[in-house]
Every structure is written in C-alpha cells, then in structure tokens.
Length: 444
Image (tube, rainbow, N blue to C red; front, side, top):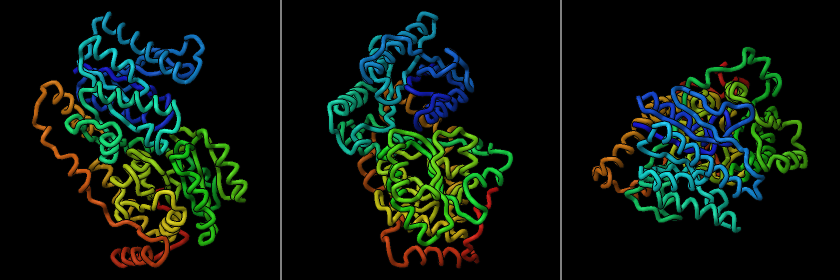
C-alpha cells in the first residue's frame, strides 16, 4: 500500500508529542512492507529529502512572502504540501490513501482527496476547544471550524483515546461509524540510551540524599505546570530534601519562572529549557517519580515514555491519562487542577519505594503488552483496508457504550485522611517490604 502522510512536524522538528507519534507510526507501517512518504515542514540545516527507517520524508521550505499572521503561514505551508504531492504524481508515484494529522494540514488534505480521488483518513490528536476549555476568540473559532472540516472530509477519523472519541462526537458530531480509537505507542528501546556517568549527571540536579521529581513537556497552561508549582511547598513541608526538575519550553515559561521566584522556590526548582533525547532519558533514569499534572490531555504519551523508562508516574486523572494509568496498579492519579491532591500523591510515591517499585514494574509490563507500535500499525492497516473494502464488519461497534462503560479503576478520592497510607501498607505487607525514605529508584 502507498501511504501519503501529511504532518506539520516530523523529527527532528519536534514541537509536541505529535511529531514522534507520526514518525513512529509511519516507520512501523513501513516495517510492515508499505511504501510510506511523509510531507512535513523543514528545520534549520535540514535535508529536503531524507530516508528515515525506510520512510521517505520530504520537507517543504519556508521560502515565501512574509505572512501577515499565523494563519497565513499555515496557508503557505499547505500550498507547498500540495505542490510537493503533485511532484510525486508527476514522477509516477500515486498514493492509495492520504493520512492527515491534525488541522494544520487540513486544507492540503481536502484538496488532494478531491483532486486525485483517493481516500483521506484523518487523525485528530487534540482539539482547539479542548486545549482552551472552549472557544474564546475568532482565531480559536476558525481553527475549530477547520478541525470540523477535516473530520467531515475524512473517510474515517482516528483518535488516540475514548476520551477524544467522546470529545469529537460532542463538539463536531462526528458519526460513530467514522470514528476509530487507536492508542499511541512507545519504543522502549529508545529510552536505554543515557549519559555515561549517571551519578555525575545526577549531581547537577540534586545531592545524593535528595529526591528528584521530574516534569517534561511543553510549558503551556493545559499541561498544568502551575499546579505543580502550587504543590511544591506542600511536598517540601513533608519531604524537605526534594528537588523538582521542569524540562521543556513554551509560551508560559517566563510566567512560571516568575511564579517560582515569587514563591521562593528557586533553590528547589530547576528549569532546564529544551532538552535532547539523551538528557530526557537520563532525567527519567535518575528521577524518583515523573509528574504530569495536565488539565487537558487527549492521550498522554509522556506517561508511556515514563513507563518505558522505568520511572514511576503521577498523573492527573483526566483524558487519556485516565485510560493509561490505573491508580495504585501502574501509577498514581490525582484530581486535575488540585495541588493538594497532587502533593499527596507525590509524597506517597517518594515515601514508599516498595510501592513505587510495584507500580513501575506493572507499568513497564503494560507498555510491552499494550503499547507497541508494531501492533498499533497492524490495527491502522486494518482500518485502511476497511475503508478500501467498505466493509460493514466494524460498523456494529457500540462506541457510546464503550465510552460510558470504560473501567474506571480505584483512584485517590480524598486529599486528606489515611487512604494512601492504607494502600502503601497493603502493598508493603503483600511484598514483605518496608518504607525506606533514602533509597533511589534502583534503575541506575
């Protein structure tokens, strides 16, 4: 099968989780024998055409008149995507299906679908409505309109969680028979590469007797980093020898720096800015827990990355996180936006290494069983074939029932009391362990 993939970003141009998800799926499809070509944006000093893991990646340049605004730059990008696709046709390469990722390639996907009369499938990774908890200005309303347009034009719409499936039905009224839920995945082997001297690396962030709490991701409102800052004094009140590492960049970076300074946390919080994959992996390895307090999370691939790296996770019980993390089984969940709940769960993870070890082991097993890209590519291929054959076999699914009866595992319902202590005690009793406040995560 010849698959044309359209994406605003593709490694090494990485803005968010979309780039790696698109790359990993494309490479997994190529490994199954498909001819995959990707059209994406360029990056400084990058090649116009390159082969990455048997996937041909064509990058369109940004040489065009100065755009008046962000939307103009998106239009220019889509014009160039169409131009490059037309060159494929002129060279004799005609795709069987278009796979478009998010609204930023929506215009090109629609034109190529109708112009070449080939099916187009869209994957919606997030929505403007969800990112902003509603639509508050004309730009947001326009972006949401384009997202709806893309789902309308698509033969099928793929989303990464049942939470997102529900959101698309609620916001865009996407018909049930067009929706397919396929989770993202993770490559566990990518997290084996770390710096040579982990002890020396760790000393840059904390003393040997100090704990490390790690966040990595974009510094934007919906990721809830401000909730983490609010939780830090509450954690330090109980575990003073704790350091917090916040990695990533984004529009909220200066504001978060200012808040940390105003709260007197500069000696306990380290903002790293953008980090490469080796530093990311090394921080996962030395961290006692990874924390992701998102307010909106369509899937939550960072949780899978932490699980693959062997770092126990604390996440907000929202969106895709709630479908990945089972409280007390492969991680801990907190109320979204509740700094006390977040602090309590971080404290529980740091104070009970036996519990952390149990959660970490189950999390890694879950990654191996459920979230391998080879299996995800197989399911994606089945959907492509379903579209080609117009088979009715998958249309009998009751998505509404599936979304409303999704198993919701035991979660932390209180921000006070002895619920967590009971859970910790039960775990330690079953494993014959004890609470040890000085041990590290044991992975280095």
